[in-house]
Image (cartoon, rainbow, N blue to C red; front, side, top):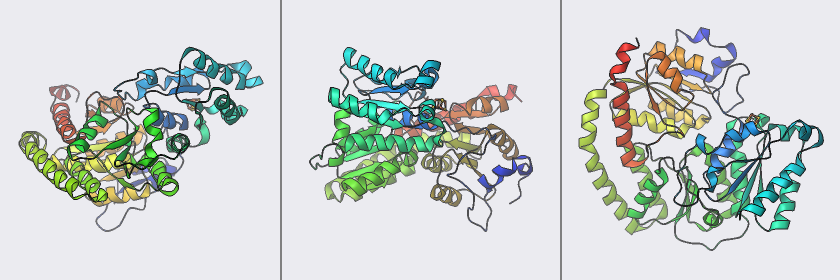
Amino acid sequence: MELKSLPEVLEERKDFIFCKDKNHGNSMKCDSESVSGAVSQRACVYCGARVVLNPITDAFHIVHGPIGCASYTWDIRGSLSSGDELYRNSFSTDLREKDIIFGGERRLTGAIEGIMEKHNPKVIFVYATCIVGVIGDDVDAVCRGAERKYGIPVIPVKSPGFAGHKSMGYKAACNALMDLIGREKSPKVKGINILGDFNLSGEMWIIKDYLKSIGVNVVSQITGDAKCEELKRADGAELNIVQCAGSMTYLAKRMENEMGVPYIKVSFFGIEDTVSSLMNIANALKDDEIIKRTKEFIKEEVRKMDKVFDKYKKNLAGKKAAIYVGGGFKAISLIKQFEELEMETVIVGTQTGKKEDYEVISSLVKPGTVILDDANPYELEQFMNEKGADVLVGGVKERPLAYKLGVAFCDHNHERKHPLAGFIGAINFAKEINLTINSPVWKYTK
Ligand code: SF4
């Protein structure tokens, strides 16, 4: 389908953009390196690894690199903790010019030693950043030496920023988690692991409450509000449920192949996906009592939702939404959430979506919807203007773009301060979309 503004997009980017037509499927390019010069919104490999591991509340995170890399800290993913606050600190080896010339291994050894003297760490993660990849410090050897000396896991996270993009960082984090989980074989227990929820604004606690209501025990949380000791027991669980598929499917597959823990994908964003996820968990556990309790729980929760939603639908029906988020699973749930509010999605993009995600996205949206992978602000601006979007759902990097265009914005990323997961999250989402779209401020910006 013809797009008015497509000719203005960089030639090399055109394959990453698709406009849904009535007749053909989705043939767009994705899951590849960003086009040089296209100003990708993606973060670096190290940042990808850090956002996955940082929510482990009682681990130490040493950033082996220049001090600037350490600015990716708790602030970029405000995961909440029910106990330890250690994870809110950032430790850096603060590499300087001399270390780049003579090597940074001594500085890393010193940083580990300093932490061991002053604290009592259970686990230390050591992130190798760009410059460490360039100068070739043997991070593995330093970590092995520290493990022998101190008797705790000191785990290297191989994440030089230039080694790919954010997705590679997810993989590096999953490998580090496997290193921790796989050290000792745990006894089998009844219960599941939650993978890919990071407890933003307490979302992990909402999901855990739902699971408790239907009689499902949680063995470990990977990694929202996680504790090192619980993580080590994850291999004993009956099932893994994977919420953020982009970051955690790799870990789920490794755990299935190497530890025999099967997995299913879930999403707790929106009523439809929350309902089907709870039902899928109950069915996967094959326990009649859990299935019965789940059906009752869902019936009661959905009954409470109807009245609340009617109010928002009146204000939002017919409005147009643009979505630009990190992973495919969230984009898919958001399309359904906008449908629940009788709104239309006109643009959908992700930073790290996979082919199968884009196929589902394509099957859910109407002809004429623009679908893009690894977009940049210029493209988002072009298509939002062309499609007349009333609201953009994204993260911190997209917020200024929306405001400059005089368009409503909803933060669905790491920095938000209220939960958007589960039934309560669906209400919060509807409330926020209503408030932002119908704010009187927009009439002064046009
Ligand atoms: S790109 Fe390299 S230097 Fe920049 S934050 Fe990432 S690891 Fe550090």
